[in-house]
Image 1 (cartoon, rainbow, N blue to C red):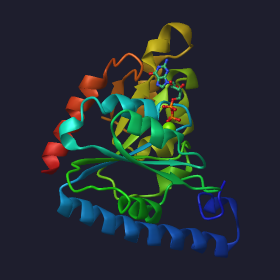
Image 2: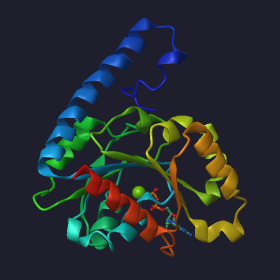
Image 3: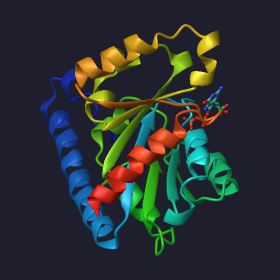
Length: 231
Ligand SMILES: Nc1nc2c(ncn2[C@@H]2O[C@H](COP(=O)(O)OP(=O)(O)O)[C@@H](O)[C@H]2O)c(=O)[nH]1
Ligand SMILES: [Mg+2]
């Protein structure tokens, strides 16, 4: 857990820690608002993808690269260390920049704003932020995105929506990845969807596989509808 997170204000009776968390979040929201305005003016649609480590965020983006050519898709990817994901995404033909957060467990709006200046976004219409693998802390940080995408994967088990409600409550769409593994893992798809929609009725859910491409065209079509409705 990182010092700046402020994700456990209720754990402490120390008022100072609570107000520090609130100050950090209100500064973050201010920067995120600035980013959102900048992206709006530039006509860029922005996604923030949040999941546990290994759910397949990078693999899904490698797959989406096939669809997004005309949008000059760009990716800002966060990990504590390494530029492995930047290299994978560039290998898939995407304009990608890596943020290393060191001890921090989430991306914040200031980091993303800084990384945006390292990307040539002049022709970009779709900017995707791959957050640090963590289902809790990133949910508290607005990054200026238009749409938040939660990902869970079948080997993680169907109880993740109930266990990590903030992820579902703060997201606009849920991808259930690795459906190609359904014959090999204990995963109840109906129960996973039920838990997610109990928290957020009407939530869009797409079962997908980054490996086989199943469900990706349906998700892409839905996403393009959202991009276009923003104008
Ligand atoms: N079988 C299967 N494996 C997947 C799928 N998506 C990702 N993986 C694998 O899961 C591991 C973690 O994927 P990665 O994209 O690095 O996850 P991230 O940490 O969320 O970015 C890698 O070994 C991927 O090849 C999928 O749909 N099916
Ligand atoms: Mg990744």
